[in-house]
Length: 260
DNA sequence: AAAATTCGCAACCGCGTGATG
DNA sequence: ACATCACGCGGTTGCGAATTT
Image 1 (tube, rainbow, N blue to C red):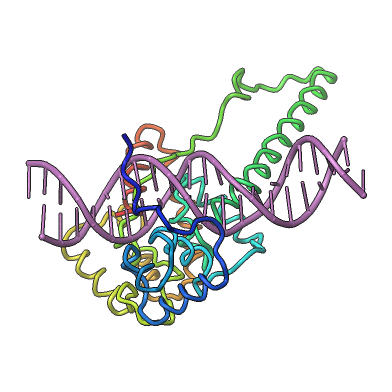
Image 2: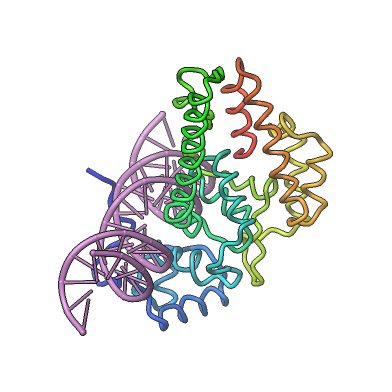
């Protein structure tokens, strides 16, 4: 037996949202803020379940959402973040201002998988041609027998729910809705929260990133540190891969440092 | 021009987790 | 310690649009 549905489906609308429903939801949230999703539909006069309202707002109606036209930079960022974090779409979305986890997930499944497959095939074809050329010229190059099987080790951690405290370690770019909401923290509050954690226990972040980088996260504006963040992530990642003996252990710590 | 197929994306679903009583 | 609630996440589905046959 599965878990009972989040709400009674009887009499509730399903499927595509109408513009009237969108207007009701937007108006309500602008007046009262996000949250209380379960009771929101009734209070907003909507015949939808709370889950559906939340999804519609998060993925479509929020005022800061960018739609379409994923730039090459974003494209690259998604690929690189995915190689580090696996299918943690919300975490990846947090690095792309105005993008939602659903959009990134869809983009990955429809565009990037194909793109990466094509990229995989191209070197294979090149390799074949090179091999043919070498055979022709009777030049022997030493290639491991199972070279074609050898793959870059990519750590794909299990899907873990992202702790809210992450918002100050890797602040969500879209966390500053221009409306009253209890869930929106000021940068000062974020800083204070970070200080508390720092005093309490090692948050794990220092394991891979120096204090200077930590300061950069707090002081710089997001777009500035975003590229630096990725570069440093990648450097650290490569370092870990070099450390054959401990790489799994280190990667676990690394993943934890991002999530806790 | 019409039918068949593929694509892209919004929406749904089930489950894990933290909070609360 | 346990049950329940509420929320958020990732996987999957369904349908309209676009493309191909």
